[in-house]
Amino acid sequence: MKYLGYTRIKKASHKDWLLNSTSSKKGNVDELKDIEGKLIDVYKHYDGIVKKHSKKIGKSQFKKSSGVLKDFYNKPPASLKKELLKRRNEHGLSECPFCGNPVSPNTLDHFIPKNDWPEFSIFPNNLVPQCRDCAPIKGDDYFDDTEKLAIFHSPMYHKALSEVTFSIAIDFDQTTKSISVTPKFWLTDDINSCAVSVKRLTLHFRGLQVKKRIITYSNRMLRHWKSLLRENDFDISDALQTRINERTSDDQDKNWETALYKGILKNQDLVNYLESLTPTGKTHVQKPKAQIHELEL
Image (cartoon, rainbow, N blue to C red; front, side, top):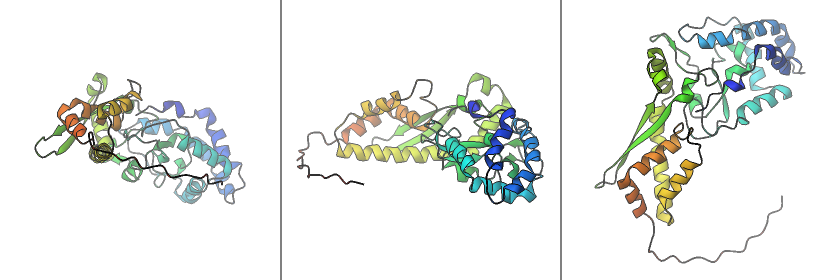
């Protein structure tokens, strides 16, 4: 998981960003222009709102303008659409910055939910790349009334997420051939020494059901590798190590995939079992390749 502070825009650029919308010829642009000044004012307070994690956000003063604000996000004019697509797709991320899911995020999360606070519907610092598995789970949740804390960390504002690492302990029963996985989350000394940080990260990962999702992911990937091994003769240890090495040493423990592969390689009994699945020694009749023809489009 990466820290995305570098993607935030500064206060001096808030008006320029809003110009992507107010300069358009969209039919309801005048409604947006009418509240432009108020939006710029409220944008100035966004950083403070997100950082005050123990304070509940006050009710929105933009409920009457909710329709137009959300419409500009859902049906953006060309200039805004271009910027939103950049933010959604051109981030260079190989895992979700919220949860560590090893997929390139292809949706944007409204960190402060737009249904309750529509004023942040098109505010860039509120639009965070996220995987499609996190999106429906997070939904419109924001504050835990029992713990009196914001539930989630924003990868744009909270470095702690990028410092969390994963490991996956794997148990293999040689008799039944059953495999069980146990995800573990690791914190630095600095984070672990702060009770509030620990509580907030606990809320974040529980809120996104990350432990359950890692188990589901791991079981799916184990089935995938077992299927490949039954059809092909290759060295599973080399294959997994190659994928681990595709990441820098600093990034290897910050996503589920490499955590899983490291966990597999640490269990030699499991590796031996996986190796036994390969069709070594079996006679393979190579079928002649059929002639192929280019399809011109």
